[in-house]
Amino acid sequence: MFDDRLFRPYVEATSASRSRAPLYFQLFSSLKSMILEGVLGYGEQVPTEEQLASLFSVSRITSKRALDELASEGLVERRRGKGTHVIYRYSPQPVQAPLTGMLQEIESMARNSRAVIHNCVMEAPPKVVREAMGLAKGEQVLHLNRVRERQGRRFGHYSSWTAGVDMPDDPDIFITTPRLSFFRANGLELTHVTQILSAKAAGHTVAKALGVEVGAPLLSLTRQSFQNRGSQEVMLDYMEVLYNPEHFQYAMDLTLD
Image 1 (cartoon, rainbow, N blue to C red):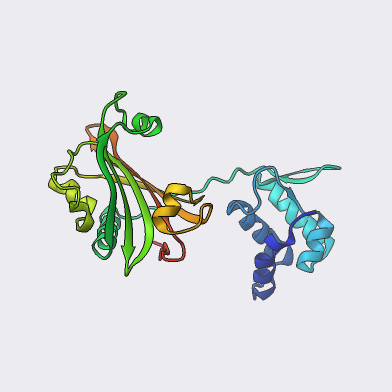
Image 2: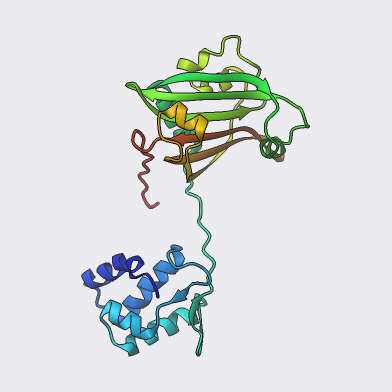
C-alpha cells in the first residue's frame, strides 16, 4: 500500500493550479517532479492507474496516459502484472555558491559567538581523514575540538583536523579568533570548500558538551576545504560540526540566475 501522505502536497498543488494544460499533463508533471526530486526513488512502485485516479480526482484514462508519458521519457517502467516502477536514479546536485561570500559568513558567525576550547593538539588523524588528506601513517595535523555558544546557549560542537599549520603558541586564540583568520595568518589559503548536511544522534561526549540527552537529534555539517597545488587539489582541512537544532538554524536564500 502506497503512502498517500507523500502525494498530498502535489495533489494540493495540482488542485490549486489554474493551468489550462490537459489534466493528464498536469498529473504527469506532478509525478515527474516527485521522481526528479527523489520523493519517489529508484525501484519504488508508483500507485496504480486506479489509485492515481482516485487520489488526483481524474479519470483512469487520464492517469494511464500520464503513466505512459513517464514511461516514454524513461522515468518509469510499466510491466503487465508487475505494475509501474521508477527506473530513474535520483542524484542530488550540490548547491554552488561563491566561496568568498561563504567564507565571510563563516567568519561572521565565529566573530559573533564565543568558543570554548575542549582540545587543541597536534596528533595523527583517523584513517578516513588521513587518507582523504593524503598523509603518511602517523603524520600529525592540528586537531581542534570546541563548542560555540551565544548568549550562554551552546549551539554547536566543532571537531576539525587541519594540515599545513603549526600548533599555535596559545590555543586560547581560537576563543575569539576565527580559524580562517588563523589560517590566513599562517599562509594557508583555501580555494574550494564542500559541505554536506545531514542528521546525527548525539553520542555521550557531544551530548555532554552541548547539554543535550544522549541520542538527541542533531544537525550534522561536514566541511572539507581544499587548496589547488598546480594541477592537483589537496584537502587541508576536515571539520564536522554538530548543531543543536533548538539553538541553531541553517538558512539558505537562493535565487535563479
